[in-house]
Length: 395
Image (cartoon, rainbow, N blue to C red):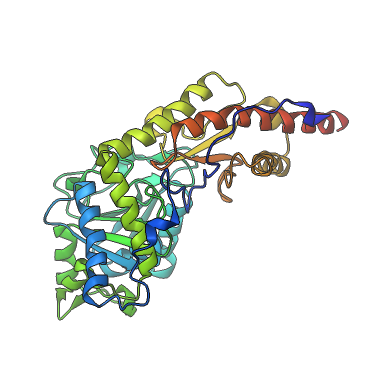
């Protein structure tokens, strides 16, 4: 009986709405990788030039200041963040903003692994932000610029002190290339290839401002650093890391794929076009949420809504009246129905987040596909509601 709900007629051309790895650029074909430097040493002249090209194109596309350094590092965004935390923290106290799972992870690393005695964790539940006015910029600050698992972003950099004494370390993995980053208010920025430009996983990007470099050259942590974390030698930053001389062996196939995404971004109009595409996707979903009674944004305020990891909560009475385990099962059932229909893959909320849906709206996603998806969300909700109501009536 539940499946008597009519299916929409139009399907998204691409059903890839995963929040990582994310959709490939429109028109992508693996033929774009034909020139990859396979079977070559990454230290040889031509492969090294490809690595340096990723750095140069990324810098230019993001409008990174000339006095910043940018390098390709191991282990995706996680590796980039960990390099920053283990290499830079400990010189002074640190404030960590935790409002979703990755920020909570950095807080755990700082408190439980680095065991910094002077660490404050400023927390907020999913959908919220910590009190930004409580941050002390005499201390180091660690935050996720965009909460990939909560759909909440920091609205701007106005709250960050320009005359700060500490460093601001921003995990921007689902923000870079989709949001304007205030470089003058940040000291470390990290991201990965598999987010906004749809690259392949495995490599991270670590950007260091001059104040971060000064810290590296003047401060030595009390703990030993693994080889893949070391960015200095003889008290000086290893400049080669920021010129394509990677610490470990990179995948030249993934490098070619990253270059393809960067060239596409340049061809469509650069950073303004990328931001515009992501905001258009958010706008399409916001308009639908505004006229739909069963769903709302997880983010508590409109200015906090992420245009990339768009997290939605189910507010229909049939859903909110269920027990917690049943709510989680119902949300997963909706995502499974959409996957079975081939209209949306991997859009269940993150495992630690409240049950709901998470739709990637980054620049590689076409707004036409987002609009085509929305009636299917209504369809899935109606199907699962029809399944749930008889069960509730029998209770």
